[in-house]
Length: 296
Image (tube, rainbow, N blue to C red; front, side, top):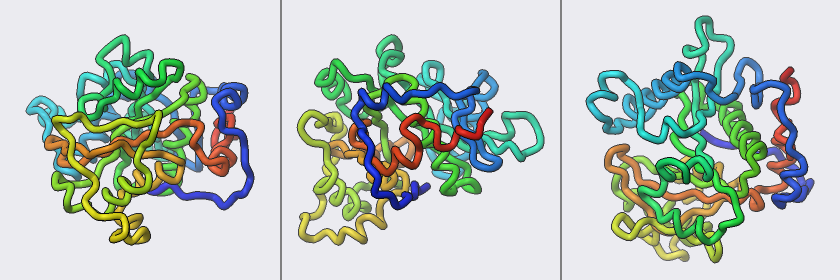
């Protein structure tokens, strides 16, 4: 999954005050549309169930994640956070049948105010999120998680729609920063020494945004000296989703965590809204209107 850039030299003000002044509510609950694909939030328990089925296909059948016997029987990827999150969907409206059969991608969105009233953030099981949040009591955070797209639909426009949905949702709720786990395949960090070291030396969180893996789970990302890293090869070795977040202006937390259940090595992505490149805002729309302007 790769986010492509448009070439643009235009600059817009990315401060949160500017963002909040330019929020525009969509005419419907559809957040974006490109061709036969559209993105919006799940409207029912049945649609959330269908999103969990997509997650199962990607995480369990494709990536070999370990799930409970009940989840295996039901062929659904489910956890306790599903009940409190909003579920962003990408649907292929050209597919005949009911709406559940049209869901081809999903993202799970959890706002800070909701997390604090319930089970907290999923990422807090791996990273010391509380320290980051306490450093920014005036900011609103949102967690992005469980991102997946069916193999056939891993195209530029699908990823653009997922980001369009995230962006529109963040504007609507006045979000100041997003974060979430980004994953490398496998449970041996050393197999990704080049990419992890590149992230450690070049895009690691600093100063007020500092956040690290929980001490008992911490695995170093500093596996190669900076002078030994070939940047082009390192970028090529990055998972496309992490590379896409970097292009948006994201930083990466200190330390990785091995997730044995999902068979991944996780890093924490931190994306302050104020970091998002002006050319991205011009492309997607400072009012989230880039792909929703034709929706009536």
